[in-house]
Length: 207
Image 1 (cartoon, rainbow, N blue to C red):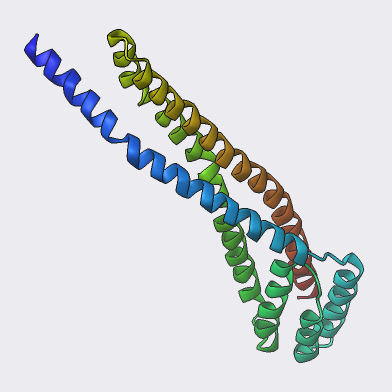
Image 2 (image 1 turned 180 degrees about the horizontal axis):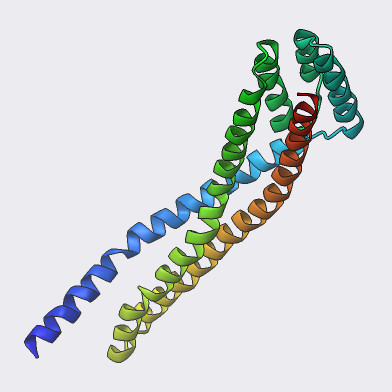
């Protein structure tokens, strides 16, 4: 019986010691989610997709590669004015184009796909762990709250329940923000990858 009590005591002590780290991490996640909102709004303001510009530039690239005019084709790629990721890809691809290293451009597109996935990982991780930590912050104070209830200590009960509910709300708040940003950015990056694939298809046809 003493062994069982000792094990339960260790579990209770360990879980109780996690409360402050959980609360601190939750507050940091809320701060991080607010920073992500700022980055999201800045990225939204810079997004500018011009389908006609993309089509005309790709047609010029196709014609110039057919004529083996790789330097002029590279300049056409530099004239691509799209969303940040697509424009950046086009400029870097132009450097490979000047050296007639078209296969390297496909490798470059994979690098950009990884970059987009990395940006999505930030909000996806927050959307996953914030509610988990909120649940931990809810369950940990329930032990002291029940002890206070059994001893008739209403103040201890109220304080621990307040912490439990607050951590739940904070965790859901940070998780909701991160989830929304993940879904919107996912659509953005699918669109960007579609434009990058269109550029790649133009180069492959022109080979």
